[in-house]
Amino acid sequence: MSRTPFESDFEQTTDKFKDKVGDMASKAKDKASQWTNAAAETVNSQRASAASGLERVASKVHDKAGSVPGGPKVVDAAHRLADGMESTAGYLREHDLGDMRDDLMNVCRRHPVQAIVSAVVVGFLLGRTVRR
Image (tube, rainbow, N blue to C red; front, side, top):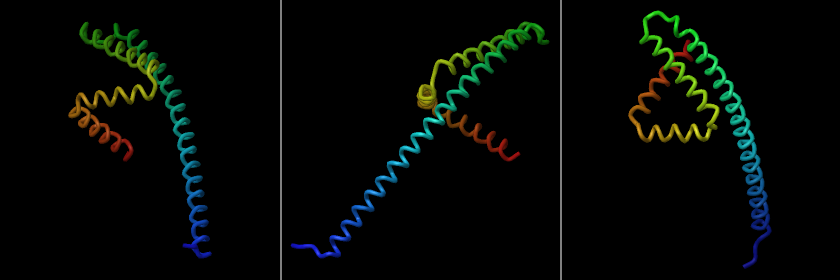
């Protein structure tokens, strides 16, 4: 069966359209990859900055813990808080964004109720912050 000129033109137009859509999809995928890489670099630089900030604050808390009123229990609590900050800073330095995501997913799987409650609380607090 032979094709009419209209059918042949239609096929050519369809093929050109498919090629253009494929090119556009490829360009969009490349651009998304560039944005993802840029975001990951930004997060990594912020991660190092946050770790440094936590270490500075932890050092100050350790230094000032002895002068906190409230007795030995409060001093001990201040030192534990500073130790936790130092531990968090070390975690931030040693783990990249993918590791953190995996750890978060594992915690959510092990403790789903707490994860949902935490997400609701964080969402509520973010909502209040944004509204102000």
